[in-house]
Length: 474
Image 1 (cartoon, helix red, strand yellow):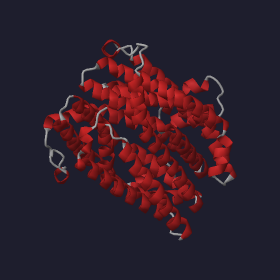
Image 2 (tube, rainbow, N blue to C red):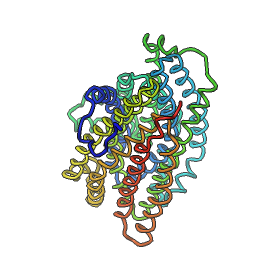
Image 3 (spheres, rainbow, N blue to C red):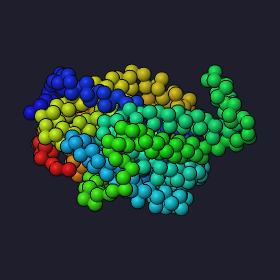
Image 4 (tube, one colour):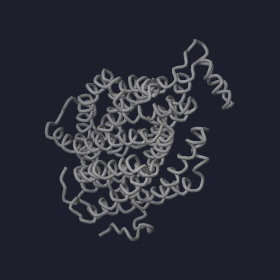
């Protein structure tokens, strides 16, 4: 057994460790860049007040819940692409991409339309404060229009990662998110406010494009507009990169051929994980509602901390995606020992990186929270939650990396069932009962969040050690 959990601090295979980092580094940078969309939205909107911040948090969580099904499409595309890469069936990597894009349109288009139509009903079902409902409705009425584009981008990400072209993914996402930051400033603050914003950053020249015309300050709605435009740009950029000669010719990406057997295989892989993401993220929406019952200040603090965590999780997610690609590729080559080594080295690296981030959360939480808000009560609750989250980074790094490893091997069902059950039968009931009914308040959901991550990590370790994933065919 090459996976030695008691020796995760030791490097077993330097060559594979280097390969993991080579693949993971662009993905980590691009993933961090992607989460900067939400990060910057929250940071800029935070200065509009706690109600605007709470509304953006709830709105982005709702939209992300719907988009999250596309993570299953990404995993299916990546798993099939990496396995075919190992088998040297390069044309079938292109087939996986086309299948994924077809599925993203079948999912994303109707969801975008339905989400837009039922915007008001969604906001009223989740919130009680009239002003927060109005802000949330403004945000999601626009943000839902971007679901189709985001879904397609996930499929592109799965393909480029699966065929080991992670630098393309990095180039696209970093460029797109730089655009999002710039658009955020203009659409949120308007022509007058954006000039003041960039002057405070000693970058006055960046405001010139916004002062040619009189742009109104759109506030919360502006954050959504910027994100949708950036998502459209990202999708087009991904598409343009397919014209690279190596990509175009090697993987025959512009063929019209669709393989029915591969399509059904991708649906089989995508459905459990997509459903898991929907159920899990729906659980987080309900968590926001529970915290909202406890208090709007607590909800604003929760949104800040979860935004920070979305960014801090990205190193583990990037290493996990690299791990999934290598596991799929080595299993395609019938080199199970190398697949095991890839899991060990990936988990070791993830543990080191996220442990370092967690240390920062523990020692300087107030400095980090103050980047988002100056409201003392929000800062107080945010510091408590972020410090606790710092201790959870090590646990989550293991659970997340092994989740990706199982997905790369083709087992998307087991992690999906485990996480769904933990969220809906343990995390949410416990948070509500202890936080609201027994009146323990803000600390209860965060304690249950930590124990849920622990139980999930234990379940992933057990499954990897069991070893039945080695026999899966994709």
